[in-house]
Length: 484
Image 1 (spheres, rainbow, N blue to C red):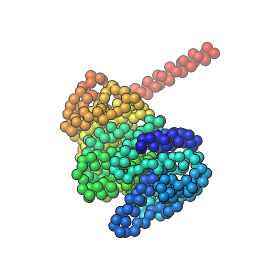
Image 2: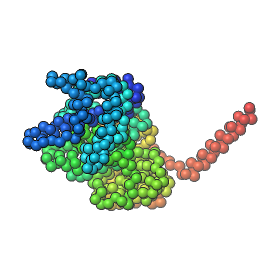
Image 3: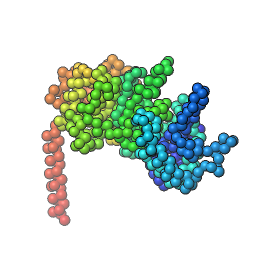
Image 4: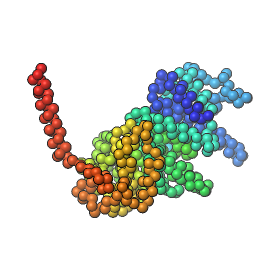
């Protein structure tokens, strides 16, 4: 039923002039799903209060509750078409009254960790793009069919929502920013092995894949006490996200996975000065796939001791600083980080090796991230002691990944198994810290078991080759002009 309802919603959105991409479909589904969820949450609270003979104070005023404007019911429990808004009346109510009312919660909330603040943030950042009130009515009717009160219902809905996020990731470059392949996330979590009671952080959380999968990992162990469940709900998962759409999707994704009031903050993480991060602000576990290829302004770079325009390198500094002593990290980063010869890259590798035990590096094949033609590695480290030995694992060497051949959990089984003991194999090997060049701190992936000789050209060689190509091009152009 849920799958068909999602398909029906997308079919209506495809007819809508204001929605043209998978990103639009997910965004517009998200705010409606959120309000339907909020209605269910309030109904549950009303029931709990009645059983305790207490009075429940609604979050939303009556005209703005789902049951009032979206799906008013008659005595027979079916939609009351006489009172249900539709057409221009529905669109005008949503744009002119509902969204401004919900956005106002941000000013009225007691703090950013409340559901009221999340409501205000969400409805201040996104807009209703469904221009036809008749299309909007049809979508609302499909949303109203959905129930996610039980854990089973939430579980099924979370899978469907994840599928929508994955479609966004496959839809193009922008969508890919929000999606890290879930098999890779699950393998990273298995290696880092978070425990209940530890605080888990992702400062570039996108669609909150790392946080959601960590919740699944921790709850799958079973035999959880009431205290454990309360800890998971309120004191375990922390995220920050800069982009509006990703923030909304992260909130909805965590809610559908079972976290009622996610600790996700809408902010530019890199705008925070590293010097301001105190001991009390630090986390036990950092899991992240920070954006790479972006460029940060000079004033943002001033917040970091190692100044660089590369977003991912700034995030890595932030994550190291954000970990407690003994804290553990699993971070995805471009593989060029391991060998770049610029001052910032060399300094950052030195910082990582000196302040953390970089115990494992997972080398991912090309195409791991669909829509992004960048090769990546995953850095696994523990803060507080210098690196003594780095274990490398080359995942599926020679394999080309893509939409029809994506990364799967089986691909990572051997890596997770061998990593436990840092075992050598034809795909894995270790390098002693003593053998790492103390001038460049080069950590290039050079598998001694592959028989393949990987040659890295020096900057001088690259520049000489460019100059030679330029000269060759100039000669060709000169010959062409001579013929004209």
